[in-house]
Image (cartoon, rainbow, N blue to C red; front, side):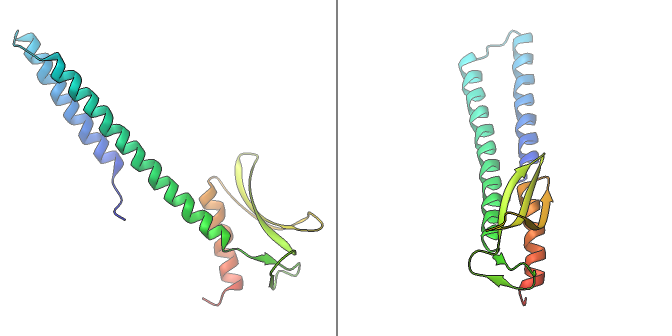
Length: 141
């Protein structure tokens, strides 16, 4: 997937809008005819382009979050010794937002105590920290 430099695209659109507005102002100053309909049409077109850019940004963010959630799903339950994984029970990975930060914490399925916690300012950061630790400790790769 090709990433779009949103800031550069918005800057280019703003530059073109400014050029158009300057030529409109010049035409009015020189008492030349200017079609308000054309101006309105272009303004709606500009808004549509900006909406499209924002939609692309949302889709990009959604893909990042989807990728992070896929990584989170790869995390397995741990035994209390932190040396092995188990299919069920044990310490389960939990993802939650608390006190201004995102956390991935392995919490006991029966006791409710925490084994280990990773936090980040964004959901992707907390998940990545947990995945890095988990995969370095429990995966052969």
